[in-house]
Length: 521
Image (spheres, rainbow, N blue to C red):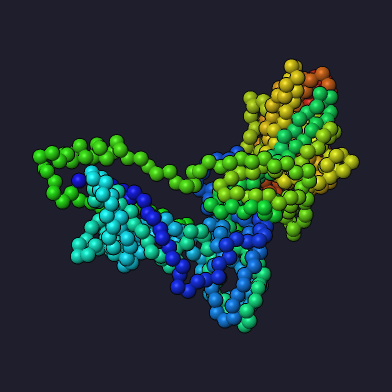
């Protein structure tokens, strides 16, 4: 006998006996999105179901409710599906709250059958051969994983009859909602209209910054554009929201997580009652047929994210403790399962200086290792230099101009968080004309008291084959408690490294030598 899945579920739902006060949507929403780890734009563009459980946002909602005197229940519908329920805070309600629940048994065919056990429903059947439609009352005796109906004195498995079947439900079971809902029981001394602020943490939102630098034909100035990518991987959208992002890595326990609704499929469990074993398929034939006809369902988290571009002329930056807050100048939609790009920087003709950088760590010396220097474009992050604003960390693509006048990618890199007044250093690819070679020429073990230490002498050869002079920064990574015992040129400390700055003339080669006094590792 053929096995038929449930054709459709028609829901005729009456109002509950005790109607709750329902807030369908907020009047105003503010969304603050945080970094969680190092995030790149490419990562946010990936179609990855795991994105829903990572990323962090603080949602601020303003809602208005009319409360009667005494006890009542408020349903705040349409809260984020990725809400971390224990973080929810309410203000503006009278006399505080008595109880709150985050309802995430979302309405679905399987959830409706599961929650309706013991209830009377209307079973409508259409005979596949004759087209005759019949209706009869039935009791739901078991749930979606093999739904069983009691019809009069007999029991039948749902979806095992010949022909289409559907159920009509008289009412919606308790605790089953069509949208994520925060339910709060409150007590009001007097009836009235109240403005309520609802705040909570949600996952599934993240952001990243990215830049594009276009070097102008003069070779001394560039145009710099910056973009924020906002990503919402949850199932709840926030239209016309006030949005800001926080630069910096907020510490979290990693234990708070959203509640995920389990939505199983309705699976009829049928058995042929009167099979003709002469024509019944052999077990191996049934296995082949089942495998060949299987189609895996596509989860909702694989919905393609839409990319939307919104330009804004100005992004306001504020200090929040040790973090930077970037506030979008206009309200924007933070749609469900969508990425959105907002331009926050568009500066033209910024003057820059070019220098070259190389470096090594204490274990990376090799006489045969010739290291191309990294090209660095240095901008003055001041108002006089054309910027003068804090810039969030992010990837940057540097474009030059080809001989035919078309833009040409010359390098990809990353810039760190840069405060106003600090220089911006843009990695712009590797040079084929400037390089370095570092080798350890001597290494001795020295015992000072009870402590073993290492003296390592390093020789670095810097080469410039360009017809113009260049500035070269050589960075030496060091262990903690490392001292410079001797050096042929004076160093400075930069970015946690020992740094030697050398000017190389046209086609010049210069060697520097230094001895490091290091702990014995």
